[in-house]
Length: 627
Image (tube, rainbow, N blue to C red):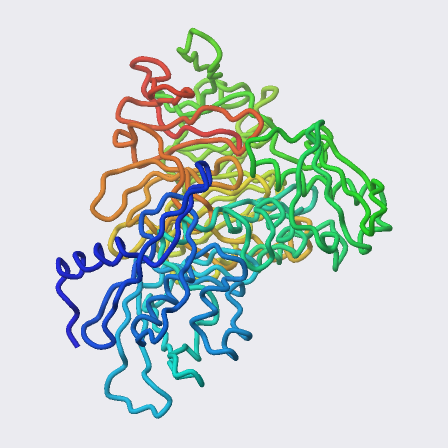
């Protein structure tokens, strides 16, 4: 059947939204309620759009209205779809649209399906069902949120289709007997109801961010506030995508003390977290790692200052298991070293370094050649470079992109021999390299005869080719390993000439980063909103700084969540940035300014200001921070 014309549908949708059967209460104002009447919907006719609460502010709370007496099948379907977006406890109103058996078995917290726009619903004509009418609900699937609260972008077919069977109960009222397995929300409703948070797990001695989504307000099922929801998710373990490469310090079965619905700070900015008996007998070093995971997980959730996390025993004992302060947690967390310098390749094709002091009134940088063999005349011509996290070594690619060298940045001496990277019939065509915090060096060969990803163990071992599952013969245009050593961002060439950004999981079978077969698994889109990505860098809290453009849009630079779920803050003036490089740091405590390559050469972005050139007329390219 043909859909209703777009302008007519938009008009009808506006009328329907004005008569929404919801009660919305602003959390920051007086407790006044705005009551809306019941919308009358036909039980036959054209496809109708259902876009619940589109554009509603995140401060607005939405409560569904129960079904009216003798409501038509169409009203029951629309009322249920609206009620799924509500904030009422246990989604009780939504359950009133279901049969008694369906209401008991429905588990809306099991998963969330996110649609790029609203739902279309139409009666399923042509089928004779003695039970009653059946309605088909369709839409464009954007992503799912699984039972671990992890966001999964849709990578295959995007068509969503669900059938809602209606039956009459003993009171001759229409009810739905086959609801969706979980919640189905438009993107606007999803962003209103849920918020992204990071929970943290250990990979070796380093904390790794695991992004998940929790309710912005009290969860209808558990009645937990957002902080408690996040802590509960942390205790439940890492997401499926990250689980193979991280571990939790909490003993299996550790949960919040029964009945815990909220967590709060005391007068000393300490968060006390009561745990069940599974955490009773842990040793102090393990307990402090547990508290460190909690501190990093919770500290970004609220504007309140968090100085300390204390774990306490359950069962009314309220005695301390252990505690960590923000300072002591930083020593346990293994966070990346704060960079001392920024680096780039100057107009004379030398690797140079500089210090950008955002606190100084003199914001003109003064680059200097790096020390060591690279500074020795006649000078090595550099195409691109990466500096180790301890800033004692540089990996440089020659001007012709055929050779990779690992060069000390301390002492003197001569240039070492190139690393034997690449197995093509011709000389390799190497991307800019990247270091992870374990000291491994990564580079990709773009030689059409033998493209691939290479790893140099410890930056000094024999290079080995790394298997990348899902690459399907496509070439890697550029890469950036995360400091934690368990994720790698890959910019991949597409057949149409565009580039797509993926994040892959680095799996080391021995868990030590040794010479055994290391692979990259489960590539997932990291910027599905963009049709072409030109540059990227890791940023604080497991985010990515991405330069690219959306469909029909202009070039922009945005911080994005690495799970591909949401566009975060954007940077000003990104249209002038080059398609080559952008650099940010992963340090959270003292983030450094963003550095980029633009039409004006190397530029940087002081906090709260506009882009500035590093040195007028100095030129340069390929800016990097250590990593």
